[in-house]
Image 1 (cartoon, chains in turn orange, blue):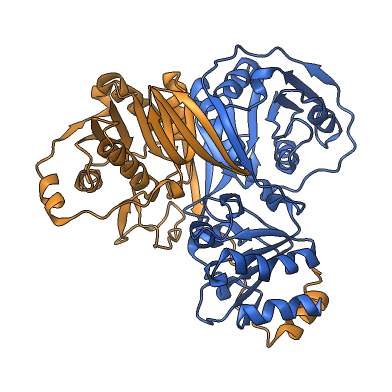
Image 2: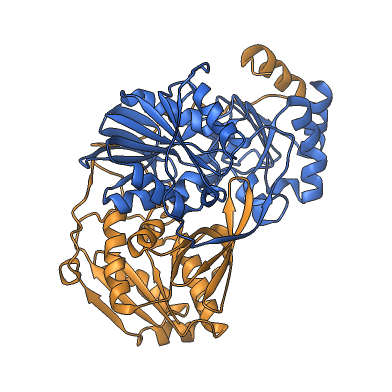
Length: 250
Length: 309
């Protein structure tokens, strides 16, 4: 069984981004970039399925500018077998376009399972996995915290607002990874060397026949309203007094 | 044109986020129809009829909606989508699960997690864990939108909208629910609570989380929440998590106990009206956004606070 894992290059999760002064976007100059944390978890899960003998090949895909090859290499270093870059140049590819690109690749690669991160930490959209499942006419199990695959079915525990839910879905299907699905490994040096020799192919939206023109236009990106914090209270009595008489919330 | 709002409910009653989503719909103009898709969901439909801002309730009552699967729900919404200018759902785990399927099947973009409506086609949404706000405009014929509940105040109750039965879509039979572990609690729903007491790694253990925070929550009638660190460490179940990828909350009072204040946690609670932080380390980032910071050992300060209330 082949597993396809889409990965996105995003700003590192420890960076506090700010809007640019001209409000045309966020300031990403000289900012550390990394693989989207949820995608790291998705890659790890796919690699573990391969190590268990459930998956036979793990193919990673990134839709973005050429520099996303770096992100794909990171996935190869931790155990993915092969990578595909969909080079979109400098345009912003929105979730629907990414889902369509992935659909075109699913048609070529015929994976039985797609494991995606549930959300990218830059646009916080939380859409691609569900959209791909819909375009394929496949079932989905979003926000997974546990995955078991056997007999052509996936049993997936999902994190939902009220607690946990366990679903069984027939394959092929899309699973999206939540935070507690696993803890991604670090690459070992020999694996880093090995990854340099793993195949990394490139294609384009035109070659895949997909229109990736953005549907949403960003008119402005601004800083959120500033919160006036930093106040201190001397002790518990002072806190109770302020909550009762100043803030009037208790 | 009319607006279709998809209700989040447990069949017997509406979830609070549905009312906030209706409030967002009201800002768009045009009458709102509330779709209640469930199994034996007459109770939820009746509450929908009484909710503010509803012109009509559409009730799709069929066994295939008992589990609220994304596949069946999306197929139903798409079958009803004709004639609607906007389709809205709460940006909860319920809405996030099925709504992107609706958008993909309609071949339109989804606008996720909006916090503001500027016009019928222009919306404000947080990006980068709320560190920036994007104003986006959609050129699509139908706008598919998930709504951040805390950004819209529910409208007054008291409506009496008619309830119309609508046909179910075919059962896709894709997924089967094997089980559920839902947290049972007498406390208020985290997303709708007026006061939240939230704990982090500083509590040290699940046992201590309970021992220290439950008396405070009981005294204040508060919901209990947690940081990711506390959930990862197994102190409390996943549904307690407040943050970028957990629940987004904005209560009147948020009391953060033993929470350091990672960007991802702040993203989930920084719109709270009043924030209290109790932590023994004065350098933690949580103090920068707290209205009232108390630098103290939580194991002493919290019981003292309970006694003083």
